[in-house]
Image 1 (cartoon, rainbow over the protein chains, first blue to last red):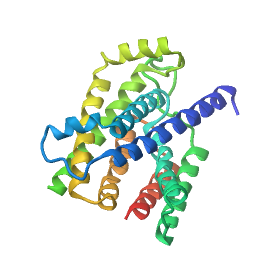
Image 2: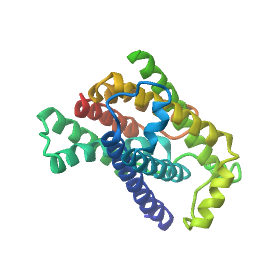
Image 3: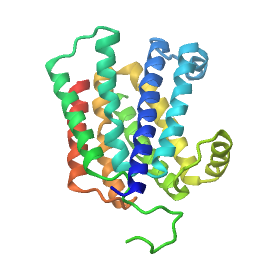
Length: 140
Length: 120
């Protein structure tokens, strides 16, 4: 494989891992910290000052930043399926940390997601569209 | 109320993520990850209307999602919002001009079915 495409693939995988972990843990802390209901519009703001909610929000800011970096070179149609491995991580974390049961239906879903991720990340290059910063006409 | 929130989430997420991809691709590959360079990149990105628009749309989607979780179960919310994968993959092809080959469509379809099965 061409050294430039090897470099881009490794960079893509590292950044995608950061996107997935910050999203999974960000949502986890957010859900842990959220109250049962948000009665008034101001409750949507004051809830942000709970410790677990603010930790979740910080991780989601990291998620936004790392996803923006990833999309600066990788295709959206590549990033979407590849980062969906997060759903698998959530199910497995539930099994290992919270001792939740994984039904046969969920296992099937996990297998399908992993197959989709393997197909897209293994068989297609992260970048197919041209970058806006490159001079026009250098690539078809 | 549930379906109105789903509609808002799907529309805002799709618009937000496509704008984000368009704005970032226009900015070009981020190569320098030192704090100073990241700060400079953020200053440039704050003047990129695609990126600013995407952050606004994703904030709308985030608060609508918080609202949805108070009126619906997670097992309803997650599969209902998985429709954004279909919309965004189609927009990636026609708006962002990415080469969405049959392998990518296949992968995206497997992921959508998988997400529905995991969360239903």
